Image (cartoon, rainbow, N blue to C red; front, side):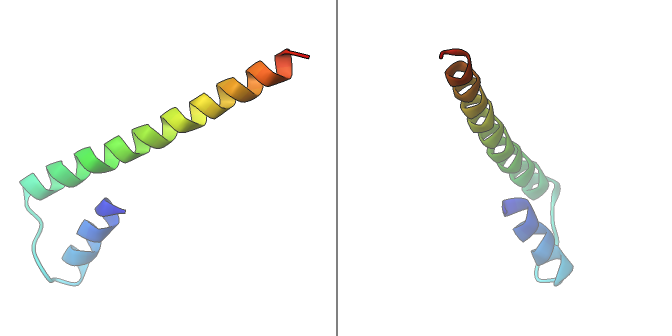
Length: 54
């Protein structure tokens, strides 16, 4: 979401993006994606564990 917001601000020519802003939004966006991946992996492990224990 934050990366989309940065893109939209640039697209509408409200404010020009800088390398620092790109770095910050990239780090925050990457952390968000990483968090979602961890949650998905945790749910998959629990589902597999439950499926294997009868």
